[in-house]
Amino acid sequence: MTITIYGIKSCSTMKKAFNKLDELSVSYEFHDYKKQGVDKEAVQRWVNALGIDKVLNKRGTTWRKLTDEQKSEADASVDAAIALLVENTSMIKRPIVEGQLADKNQPILLCGFDEAEFERVFG
Image 1 (cartoon, helix red, strand yellow):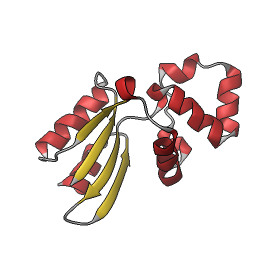
Image 2 (cartoon, rainbow, N blue to C red):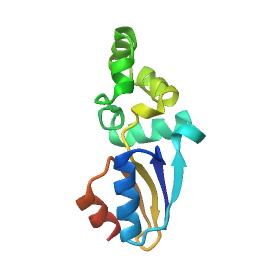
Image 3 (tube, rainbow, N blue to C red):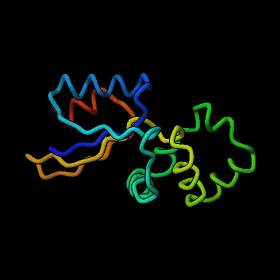
Image 4 (cartoon, rainbow, N blue to C red):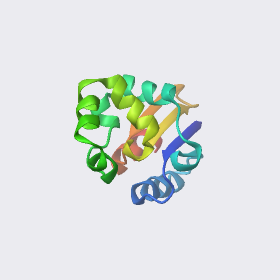
């Protein structure tokens, strides 16, 4: 099983996700946006699979601090929204869990923490 969990170490939602993965004995690599950034290809892949509305967190302070012009551009263009996500990784909903379950040869892409979903996928 090769799993990468993307997010920010200090985020309380990330801590819940780490605890649940540990509880389910799932090994994973952690990719810290704040320290490592994230490339456009990864964000594009997530948006293609899940949709911009799922990946872009409009409830956080980073979104609220954007100018009205930036928000309008992001709402009008997925490409503009992706560019903002790459620049402002705090606006990516956390966590993003991506990888492959070896025993099921099945790709995984989860966005946000849902305990029941984690148990269903990894349990």
